[in-house]
Structures are given as structure tokens and as C-alpha cells.
Image (cartoon, rainbow, N blue to C red; front, top):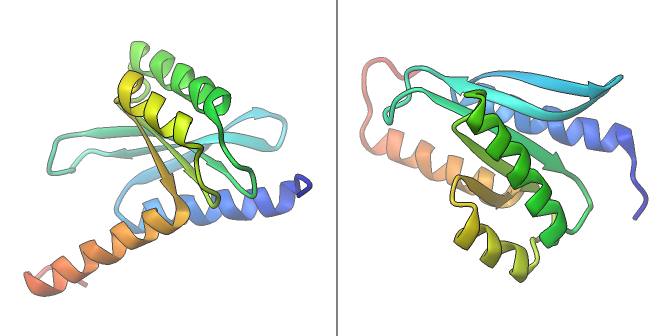
Length: 138
């Protein structure tokens, strides 16, 4: 499938909106003219403490080991410069088994998720909120 920057941008905007709904402050980071390369998401009131996540999104592209390694190196640099605590690589396609295994073994601060997994995780959170409601839920 051919690369379509418009579809890629819509996918990234959807992921960014999802994180905003989860309470993160987000901003796209643009490296080349108008094409954002990743999203920065921060939450200062996270139960595990302040969170800074570097998020990359790819649409209609199977991700194999070289792409995952490249993103891991970006996140490693962001961690060294205190710009991020962790990374999240999101795709609407599956990751190669080699990429998953390598990331788990060598890059524990990066998570690989399909868009479906991201949405299902959020659906589970909403179910938990309904189970244990508080007065402040809107």
C-alpha cells in the first residue's frame, strides 16, 4: 500500500485525541516542515507519578525490527535528555515477531501496541471506572 500523508496525519491526530481524552497534555513534534514525527504526551497527576511519553504512529505499514530499533534509539536519546520517560509505538498493523522479542529483551522502556490494543486497553479502564465510580467522574 502506498504512503498517504493525509491518512497518516488523520491516524496520528486520532491517537493524539485518544491520549488527550485519557488526561494527557499532548503536542505533536514536527521535524520536517508539516509532517509530525511523533507526539509528546505528559501527565503530571498519573498514579505512578509524572509521565512523559514519546509516541510514534504508523499507518498501513508492517513494522519489523529495523523500524522498532530506530524508534528505540530515539526514545533512548529522549530519556538521556530528560524529554521522555518511555516510548510507545502504535500501528494499525501487526509487529513482526522478531521486533516484539527484541523490544521486550533490549528496550523495556518502549511498548509496541496496535491501535486495536490501545483502544481495548482504554475500554477496560472505562469498565473499571464504572465498577468503582467516584463522585468526580463526568
